[in-house]
Every structure is written in structure tokens, then in C-alpha cells.
Length: 182
Image 1: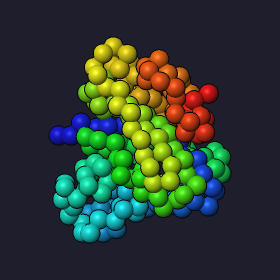
Image 2: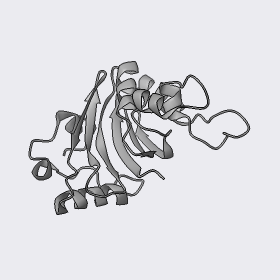
Image 3: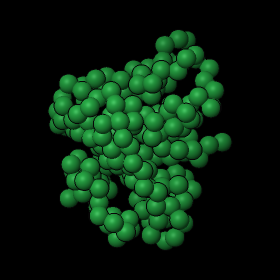
Image 4: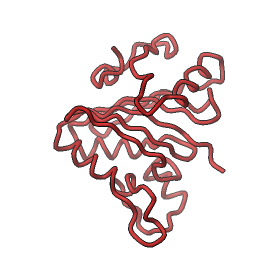
């Protein structure tokens, strides 16, 4: 059984590009057995067949599952709040695909898995580049960070908190651009 990783990000970009991303988030798998499953990752980076192999998924999506428990909110034409769960890892390759296919998009956010305090950190990027800063060392501040990410409500109530002390460096500019580093 996989450890589930929760990922919360804000995507900022041109309305037209975010409209396309939003439409991908609402697609479902076709076919009798797959009607209830999300199809977001497969819309961005299509699998060659319906029975994916783990090696292909990790290589092209950066995780072993499609987005589960996907939630998004779009109160602004140029901003999407996005949250979902994946197995074992946050999908860095999916974020690379988003920023490669949609050049105006900048994103920033947080991730943490059920093993609170170890597999957690921040992610941010633009123009096909994704940066990940792991902060999971299992110490109390990392466990608190992971707990906040895991306990976030769908409205993203934890966005906006300063992590400079925890990160040991200034917050990346992408966080400020999407409104997370105020």
C-alpha cells in the first residue's frame, strides 16, 4: 500500500492557459471500469496504454498514480488553487509538463506524505523548470510543517505562512508571485 502524498499548489498564468488546465482537471477516464477515476495527469502526459507500468509512470509523471482526491478552486481568472494526492511522490514531471505546455504559468506549493516529517517540502517553477526543496528530516519543525500540509482544508488555509526559518533561506520568488509568500 502506498504512502499518499498531498500536494497543494497555486498556478498563476494567462486566463486562456489556465482555462485549458482546468478543463484537463475535469476529464474522466472513458470506459466501463474507469468512469469515476480522474484523468488529469493522463491529459497532460498521455500513457501509451491503459495498463501503465510503474517504470513509465515514474519516468513521465514522477509518481506511480494518477491524481486522487483532486480539488481545485478558481476565484480569479489568472489563479488556480490545486490540491490532490498521489502515491509515494509529488509528481514533479507533471509540473514540468504544465510549465512546458503553458509558458505563462508559474506555480508554487507544498507537499507532504503520511510519514509526516520525512517526505515533505516545497515545489515551485516556470517555463519547464521545476525546483523541489526537501525539508523532511524528521525533526519537530519538519513534522509540524508536514502536519500542517496534511491537515490543510480544501480552502488552502495554510497558504501564506512564512517558511524562511524552516527553509533556512529566503522564500523563492515564485511563492511571492502566486501569493504564497506574503
